[in-house]
Amino acid sequence: LSSIAFAAQVPLEPSVTGVVEKLIQEATHSEIRDLLANSTAESPRVTSTTTTATTTTSSTTFTTSTSTEPTTTTTRTPLKAVRDTNWTSVECEEEATCYADADCGKGQCLGVFLGKCNCHACVANINCDSDSDCGGLRKACQDGICRCAKALATHGFPLYIDALTKFCSQRSCTETSDSCFGLPCGRGICSCK
Image 1 (cartoon, helix red, strand yellow):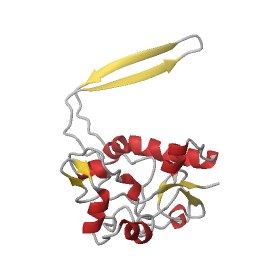
Image 2 (cartoon, one colour):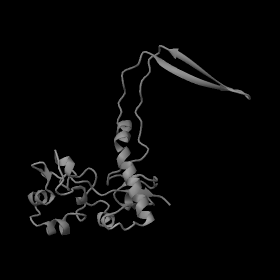
Image 3 (cartoon, helix red, strand yellow):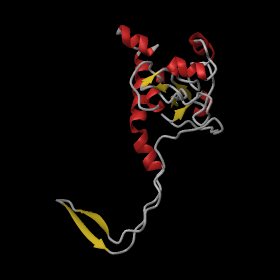
Image 4 (tube, one colour):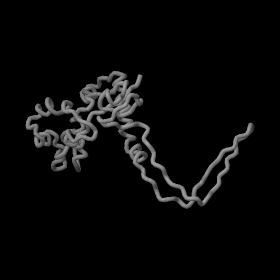
């Protein structure tokens, strides 16, 4: 629907626009967040630098000292939680990734086609080097071009109308399930208000 609205230059509702912006922002920063969340302890460093600040009524003095004590890196946790369907909570975490209202405790999961296979990720007839260029749909990149309908046919939907009525935005999924043949699972963000 959003691609139809985009093509027709029809403005989206403000609430939908906000959700879309949040999802785009989350996707853009997901690699950085994953790196921060999945960082491992590094080998100890030989030198560490400590900066302290001393505040007086008229000025601030910064002192830098260097020591040769080893330091280690600790693992960071992400700011936004990604939850699978087995996770339960009575509390709602604002803007956490969700696939259903149940993932947000007493809040609400905002988004479209939550927990459903997203066929819109595969754009037909664009150039590709691998299936990842075709939204992840397995067997979609054929001879350097995304052939989404042909790939869906190999996965049991010989007619495109069958894929639209029985699979696309219809089949349930989670982030960890493989029920979408490599396509992403529709997700949203928690609203706790």
